Image (cartoon, rainbow, N blue to C red; front, side, top):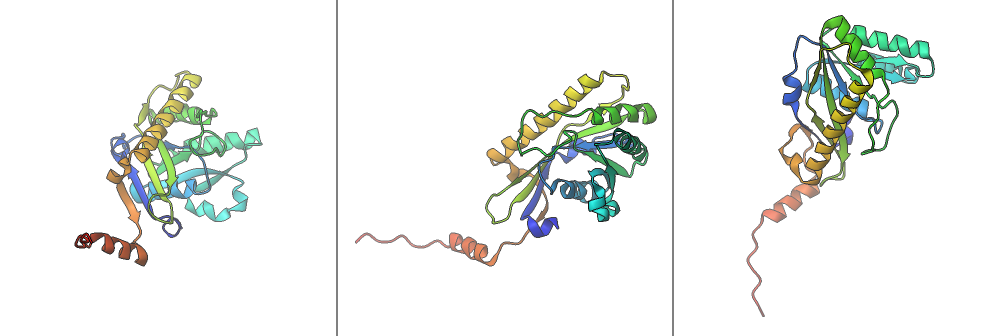
Length: 231
């Protein structure tokens, strides 16, 4: 799906994930701005990190096929259902083949929306994961979709610096603020890279072949025509 709709997928900062303690569970947290975010996270976990994705989806009954792709249901309108989903998330982290992916803002926001403010679910899951497993990796992910020089947009992803949480008794509000700051900084760095052309140095997960008219354009640009003589 992704390769049919996007020209390229570029990413940076993988070394931040690679440096995580592989014996501790990992949570990716990212902003949520459109329908493609879940598909992007699926490609990140499966094709870049070589792990299984586990992700909460509200109203999963509308998209039951997503269960086969690692999604599980949450009904935020029911406190009991939401708590069950949170407890299930903590259990999933016990299998180190999984990466739990969360959108802690709890709502779809426009791209580059500020301020970045989280609900308390991420901090709660992280603290209880530490109680159960001793440590958890918290990796912020910035995701953007930009048109560059093709008629299709590109997916641009940046892995932020890992927050290795080992204190299960840290203040939840303070931890939430720390995670908000980490995601905001990662998103800001990605925006800076895009605006300054720095994404040319990013790794590439996939990139489409040039269309025939773009290939002709590239050929024409490479031809050195003799200068036109003055009349």
